[in-house]
Length: 509
Image (tube, rainbow, N blue to C red):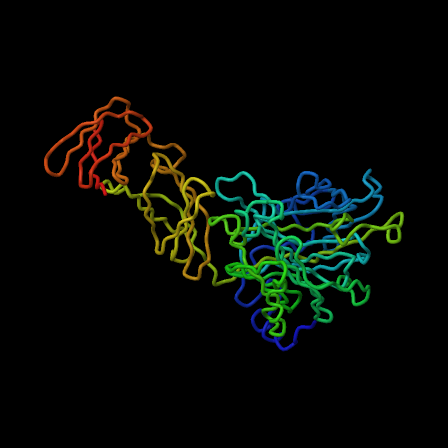
């Protein structure tokens, strides 16, 4: 199946490239040109350690996919020289006991990106046999607030260039994420959705589109060793917006992934190739959907990701299948050369960067109003927040502030803001009640507030007297029975509550 060429001039008009680091409407924010002029270079490989780290091992710590190689930090596997980065996989590395070795570098904790253009200029050498592969891909650089870990694929994965020797004609550009199923938990069905397009820019053909939960797929791919994609340099990238990801090779956008709608279910009598009918429109080919996954407050593709450049060898179902005796000489090396990696921000995207410096409490209702301070960026159009844990459903408010009613004496708020175009800024953490500098120390003051049919008193000493004044002039008393929380049932009306010197007017409904 082929894309019409008629949309090519449209794409070029949208994103013309005039010179290094320049796209109309975009600003280059980070790049590695692999020219070797680093102040913090690794002495053996020449890699810029200010931007990258090595990840070594065979993946047994959780990141592996069953491949047979051992990733090293040796110059035989990773090398910056001659203006390019070389990542090599090979058999019988002279300094390693593993039969197969590879290279794997990542920008985790050093460089993370959200929205814009992320691209690399790449070619492969001698990677046309089964079990040999390379990937330029992204993984989450942040965790849900309050979480110490994030299980794959709930956090998402973006594969920009996924190439292997079994199918050397094609590049796979795709996303992985958790299906909106079984409460987004990893279960017997895998709870794994995979959506993407496999594309050859040389003849502009698309042979396959994978999508749906585990076990769903599309058409088969051509295993011919002709018309090879990897031998020459191509630019592989994504246009990352707040509602979609566009995958492109050179000037061709061949797959668009939308993440604000529901993906079709894969199974009997279901459509496993959602959007395939749109292939002739070119720009919107491969329209696959959904990504509001994991929970309401941590939307999969609305958080920063880091970059990975990795090679691998063999393994059932990975890197193009197992290596066989017919394609496995005693010594072999295949090399991926990366000319550069570049990241651009769209000039019109300037989400509000905020801090929460002040909260106001209504002593009558107990309601707290939070007005974040904008530090930079566009004006605040919408606020999203959740209380105490990412597991709580996120709440949103239109405008530059929001109000909520505390249910406990101590809370942690997680807050972020969006501009009018829907682009979100940073997550910030704020404690309630606040100290003067909003540190992690809470004030242990008495709190009095109303709830349905009762008044709640927190942090008072057991045995303290509570005086309750009704609007008709009568007064009754009660005793604090728990220093954590005491509830006193009252009929509907207005009251003034006094305890240990704290006086509060409340309305009981």
